[in-house]
Image 1: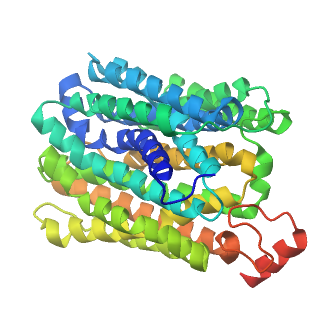
Image 2 (image 1 turned 180 degrees about the vertical axis):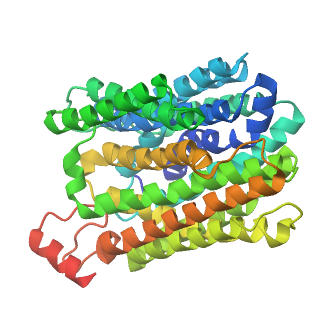
Image 3 (image 1 turned 90 degrees about the vertical axis):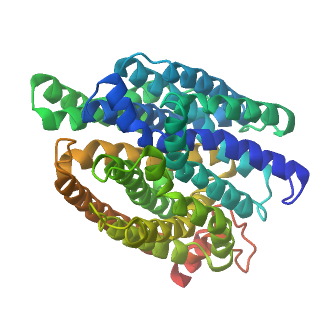
Length: 482
């Protein structure tokens, strides 16, 4: 095991943060480029939704497979595969001549990201001791969150410097640096058991999510035969996925994990909080450009306070959760996120940035800083040591699924369209923010009723901070104590 504070620890954290960071970055950096992409490639709102959701479909569907591959074939090896695939797809995105090519390249990019994200967290979990792991996860969460938050600002700057295509080219140097660090400094690790890979589950999950996205995005334009058939196929394939996973001897998604109330609750909280996060970065940045006339760099810079708050406070959030337990931070954090969403709803044409978007971004960032590190550590605490890859894969899949659903559903649900007047556009976005605030607050309530206070702190019988409790009597005492 690697000790926290050593040079080896810093290299491992740097590699995992950079690797997952480029995947997180691409989840948000493209948001600010959407108006430019739409204008250059002559596409409508649906085309822009697909630009985001094609990435999220494959990222979400293959995250589970990525975690399982890492556990069985080697976490470092699969992480490197992800870096290579992601880099190649990024170049394809940068040279895309039309929106169809861009959407396909983004889907490939998402598949590469699915190997990076769970692999990075699994490398951390298998490299650090029980005592040091929460701090490592806190640093990973905070710096990874910064990658997501800095995306809109970086994207705006790159668009103004040259073109939206530079948004994808920027991934290449980061990926090359990550490859160099990983090959030299990251230790290899894998699960003790080598089981067959659940290809059927992966195919059903990706196809089902893609069909569901098609129905959700294209449905509002008219319920034609293609939409109806695709919606039916989505239901059939997603149902078949769960049937296959329940019967498989080597499932990509072990459904038994969800018998653990804490694991299920933490992932439900993830779904709620990351849905709010995705709504904010998609709709607010889009609103500032389309309805309020902000330049790309100004729209991106408007959310920089989120970056600052997550950078300064996420590691402290992980340390606090280790001292007092994750239940309070995971309850209060989503509530603060909800308040931030309500503040975003106050944005309107002619409003001052400093009295609307700025305080909203500060509060929103504070809520994320309170939530992300304890949430991630709680998920890892609920699984066995040889299941950290699949555990982190499930959690990251929940986060990306939240973004996928928010982007596919919210614009149509509240009637957002670029043909609206600036005032009407901001009114519709405000409605979306109200919905997102309610969902985020629900996530806090779920955490309150499902997460144990003792989940990350040592009990008097010295149960490990990041190991599941296998003693039913002790588990019952901890449940009552919380």
